[in-house]
Image (tube, rainbow, N blue to C red; front, side):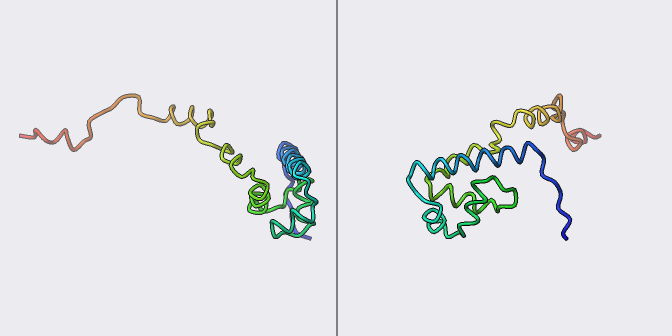
Length: 111
């Protein structure tokens, strides 16, 4: 049996919410799982697992489903650098406090 690492609770919860949102989008478009799976060139079981929030689904399959549903542009906000407040703080903290001339400029006036 393969050694499978557990998925954090927050990740599981997020995948379940995403799956439910995909299911609602499919139902609003009055599509069956078979119809959407065929349009995405996926197995109906894979689509079912996406809608259930299974952790082992390839991101490409999820994006394909979103594309067929017309929702792919919503992925643009995922991990966008402008919304990474923690990363911005770390970046600013690691920047030099003041600008200094490089060492090569110090040797320009060597007599």
